[in-house]
Image 1 (tube, rainbow, N blue to C red):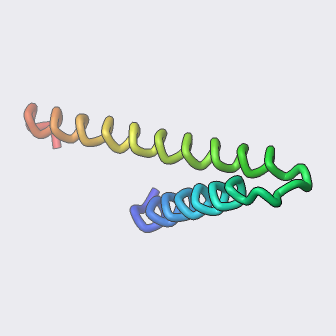
Image 2: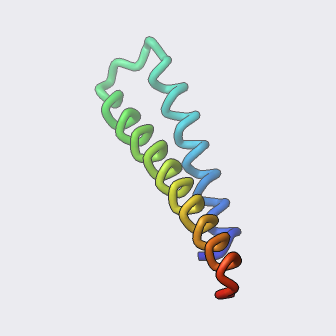
Image 3: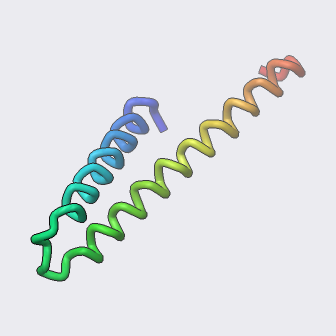
Length: 71
């Protein structure tokens, strides 16, 4: 996956988190959509965390390859 696409996915998640938090802080939100916003928030946070974990794993792999001259 290209870095450009991955950066767009990260930006989308961060925007979704911000929007969900803003909506959940709205005390006038009474139409039952709270669950939708909570789900979006959880998914976006989880996806960002997973991406970070995968990036960290890749960094470690690159360092290990460099140490063993496998590049």
